[in-house]
Image (cartoon, rainbow, N blue to C red; front, side, top):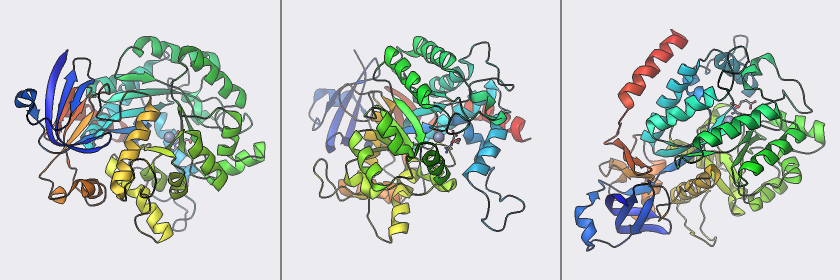
Length: 473
Ligand code: NGQ
Ligand code: ZN
């Protein structure tokens, strides 16, 4: 059954730009047909006309939704610091723990809903929610142990964004099974309560095409090798293809602690001890030596890159040129949500490299085999869409038959897009804009954003406003 048709004069399909594309959208929210060169097709006459170029929605593969409410609150130096001296990822984490330990379920939902509206308006159509806030303020489970997961999923349903919900296994406070700290009390589960949570969420949402449930061992700091094995064995019994996400090698301190614990670097340890492959997403993977970069690329796993957060937290630079040269898969995430913009993530992915290498046009695919292009914007955008879709484990990431109808209509009046050829459009999008060029957004066949406005944005904002007053007032 077809619920709607859309006609686009210009659309970015899986194998490149096409003209006069007719999209037929099935009632289940997937693309039933995608037909280029269909100007003469009788169906085109009655189709809604896209106002501008149509591109696939961008997956946001790594999110901690509650952190959006902290954006802008951690940019002051600690009191006794010499300029730039002591503030670090670890001091930021202490502030984050303080903040997280006040949030109520209603506040978590209100923050996530506002965030997801902002994501949709920016052109993200799916999110990977790496969710570790499980328990009540005192660290005891809620009556429904999935309470906070449900709040985040409800925010996704309310706003319409597709969600891969990744409940987090958090059990330890550091390598070698170090006990967790007081600030981590709301995150903790043993393996039994964790797998029950995953099972509950799968039972409740497993048949919803807008939701996928995966797992997320938080990091090698937060689980032991045994717990990691048990979590993976557990999900394998339920769903052997489910996505597995893990934070890894984001900070030098973490690499050093891993070396003293195991004699190996984090990525090296993971590659040697788990069957890392296409269902895996290694978030950050910032600090790798060449052998790790090559092996990770060859494993088929996705590197989950979060350039604005990695910059904000002073993490370091992912070895992107070497990784891309080995055809490594990657996607982007807004992680701490210091910025909510796929354009800014992609731009900084390239700019970090330009600044450090003192060169231009670093991340392109010219000279490589499939879909080769010398366009940096096209390379970054299309690879991030594909890698993000892979990491989120849903049928998204291409405007192709059978995929979810997740698409973005660019505003053709955006000055910087005017007159740009197919070869230049995504370069202009990624590098030249400071105004949001997203006009309309469809997710799973439903128009959520039209002429720059999300259909629930007023109600969602009103709730977010009261939440921020409660938290900061
Ligand atoms: C997180 N964020 O889980 O929110 C982490 C901080 C940690 C980033 N790694 C906590 N960016 O890694 O221990
Ligand atoms: Zn994270």
